[in-house]
Image 1 (tube, helix red, strand yellow):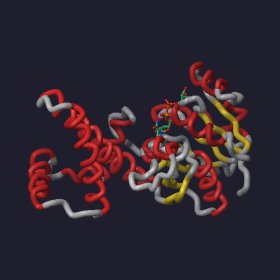
Image 2 (image 1 turned 90 degrees about the vertical axis):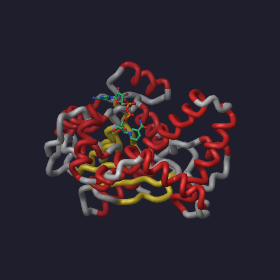
Image 3 (image 1 turned 135 degrees about the horizontal axis):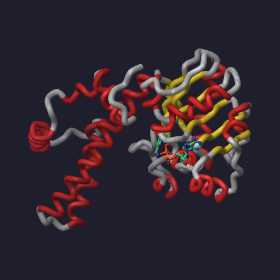
Image 4 (image 1 turned 180 degrees about the vertical axis):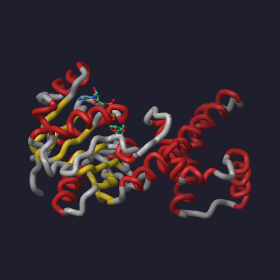
Length: 283
Ligand SMILES: NC(=O)c1ccc[n+]([C@@H]2O[C@H](COP(=O)([O-])OP(=O)(O)OC[C@H]3O[C@@H](n4cnc5c(N)ncnc54)[C@H](O)[C@@H]3O)[C@@H](O)[C@H]2O)c1
């Protein structure tokens, strides 16, 4: 694999630290940029040297913007004019790119990536893989990427970077920026993470309101959550007849009939506007 010149902006943040921890293990040339004192401290505590943003981006092949989504507009406005022609600006979430908040340039390529996180069905082998639920440390994961260029060299640069920052990576799946926004937030945050939080609320209700012993409630929920996902997502076993009736009651009581509207373009825009603290998306 060829080596690249990579600038990480926001190197001391949550994702910045994760991607930097992986980049130090590679042969790539990496510059670390961070503007908050706490983030600067985390970067230097990890043994990494800080570089001024203007210096870091000047010769970088790819600039990873690991800053909060709300900062991506101003940070891209400041840095995109400084990058070299042909460079790639990579964000780690599609919201700002899809909402048209990023400063763009004819000769600069916009790309977005997002880690899939290790699959529920991953055949983990080691304690480290079991402990790594987020990914990027020990458990292999896939990643999604979108790049606004047909140039194979640019796609390779993005893929090499994605494989390095989220390592260990199994597959990189290529989609459009809009499709990435349909995946994340809609599919995985609006639906999957919401259901994860709902499970926790239901667990608390069972324990705190109904008075069921906590150990019993957690144990049966954790096991049944695996069965629900293995049967629901992979068809491992059929749900029992009684379970199907209880599931129908749950759907009627909890889910709105028109819930699939969340996938419509106008609803995606509303969701993104809320996430980006905007009144509306105007692209
Ligand atoms: N946190 C997650 O689990 C997660 C997962 C996937 C993708 N992402 C995406 O990663 C990106 C970063 O999110 P995060 O959660 O790591 O944010 P964070 O708030 O933890 O870190 C952001 C860092 O950027 C720094 N920063 C802000 N403005 C800067 C500037 N102008 N120059 C240099 N540094 C600057 C901040 O000081 C901070 O250290 C976002 O796009 C987010 O959507 C986050």
